[in-house]
Image (tube, rainbow, N blue to C red; front, side, top):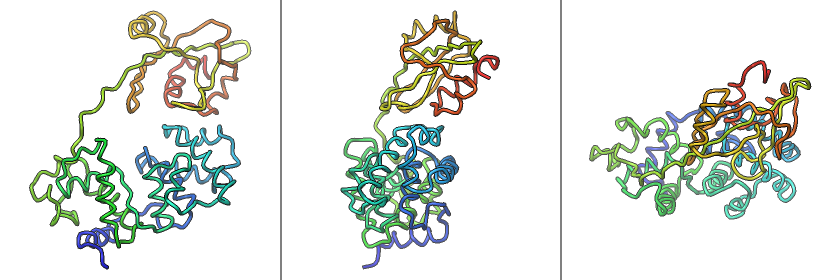
Length: 339
């Protein structure tokens, strides 16, 4: 059975205008997996360089499995969402010990591996094994919601099941790898969030939102949750005679798990404002995450030891895996102290 007419048009468009990316049209399951994990929370323009560097450092699942977690976190530095790197390390060890270094083809087994959720499992099944499954990302949400003028909020509890069923109905009897790549490219290049290029879209004759001239009304979102604010004070504790600075390692799980940072503690907004005014040695920093905004300042502290701190040669601190916030702090510290 041939694909539906609009899918035929999509694949023809992709053949002419699809992007050339290093992780496409390859048979290496490991490289496909690495690219998908990196691109989960990272734009392609940024992820491209990280992908090439990561593959150069860890060229296969065996080298990743044998590496230390700290070296993986260092290679991941700057990408954020460090749980991805920790889970990749765990997953690599499982793949080597239980699957001879290869990915299982069964979708349900893939979903049981660390760090592999529905999107990544389907991406591996499609791109690595040509299974007839559709991936669902922000581009696909947007295309489907506009195509059907669908008012189901894409951030609602029922959205994933609803739009996944629609996407799966589209991929039937189509080459899934090309279909999924085409949908992502169409969303990135044509069906963009702002100012979509509807006249160049292969779906223009079918898209309800375009035909009603309401494309930018979709997708529909529920109101966003209010982002909480937390106030952090970093402590600069250094030994000038030994040329050392005190640092501490975060717990392996949770935010920035396993990364290194300056000792710090959390305060109230009132306390933070007072410390900024009276003791801060650098300008305050705002660091925004998905659900949290961090307000951070740094003080010069004369205490000899913090509960979890260790002394480290200050010239070598930058060689450790650090969170982006910690990098910001260190870059602003007086050069005579940290250099």
